[in-house]
Length: 80
Ligand SMILES: [Zn+2]
Image (cartoon, rainbow, N blue to C red; front, side, top):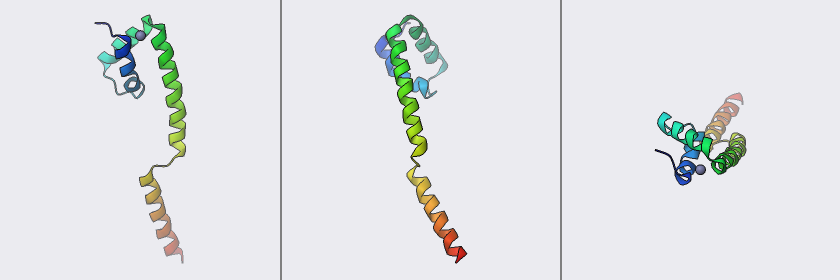
């Protein structure tokens, strides 16, 4: 069964996040092979995620910041 463009687009973020099952991946790839607009959409989505991914690397998670602060205050207390 062929995916519609709507269904293909709905699966793309899961596909890029490697959360899609092998059957869905195959169906999506099959759709992309025959559908230029969806290929263009996937390319845009992938570029957007790459930019967002870089931003996420720079931004430290709140939990990590909290642990780091606790660790540092522990260390500086011990050094006195
Ligand atoms: Zn399509």
